Image (cartoon, rainbow, N blue to C red; front, side):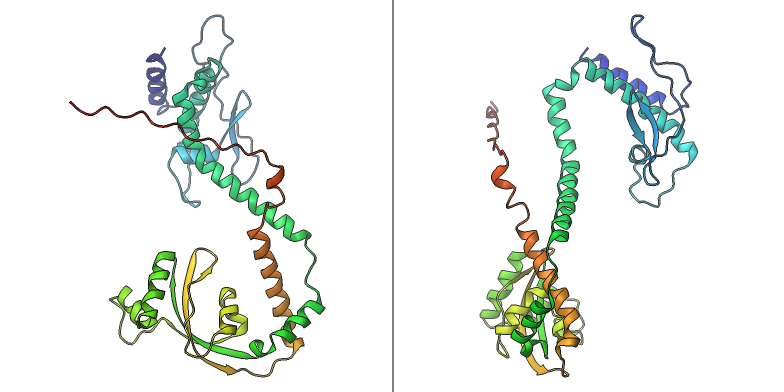
Length: 309
C-alpha cells in the first residue's frame, strides 16, 4: 500500500491532461460506483464560484486558478483550461477522500506536512478575523464629543496654531534607526546619514528636508515629541505603524494663520477618534485572554545526528 498510492496518484495526474469521460473511477466490486465527473457550474459568488462538488466537498474556481498557478486577479481562465484541470482536481479529491476513509490522513508525516501547508491560511484567518473583531469593537465605542474636542483645542492651541519645518530619517528597520540616532549623537547630520545610504542621490536633492508642516498633516507619532522639542533638537527613535521608524530634527517653528475652534473641530474629532482606535488595537483581546485555555507545548528535541565515520 505504501507504494501503490503514489503510483496511483501519478497515473491519475497524467490522465488529467485529457478530457475525462463520464465513466466512474474503477472501484472494488463491493464498493458503490464513483460519482460521474460533471461540468455543471454552481455559482456561489462572483469571485469564487463552485465548479463541482465531490461528496459535498466543493471544488472552486480558486482551486483551478491555483492549479494553473495564476496569481494575478486579472489573469483570464478559458473554458478550454477549466475542463481538464477541473477533471484532474475532481479525481484528486476522490482519491484524497478514499485515502482519508482508509485512515491514511492519520499518518504522522501527512499530519506534519498538512500543518505546514495550513500555516499561511491560519495566518490569514487570524488577521482577517482579528481585524473584523477590532472594527466591531471600535464601532461600539462612544463617539468623541464636542466638549472633548474643545478641551483638546484649549490644551493644544499653541500647537494647533503653528506649523513646523522638520528633517527626517525614515526606515523600516529598527536597528538602522538606532544606529542613525547614535551617529547623530556623535555629530553626523540627518542629511549625512541619508546621503550615505543613497550614494546615487543627486547633490541638489534633499529628501530628508520637509517643507512647512501644519499640525493637521504632521504624522501622529511625531506630535508629542515635537510639542516638547526646542528648535535645533533631534528626537530619539520614534516608532510608527507599519514598521516605520523615524529620527526627526525640529528646524523651525512659526505661527500659522489664525484658527478658531470651529475651523479645527472636525480635524480634532477625527484625530481623537484615530487615537482611540489605535489604543484599542494595542489592547485588543486583553479582556479575552484570562478566560482562554492556553497550553504551551515545548517542541521535542531533534535526535542527534551521528558523526560521520
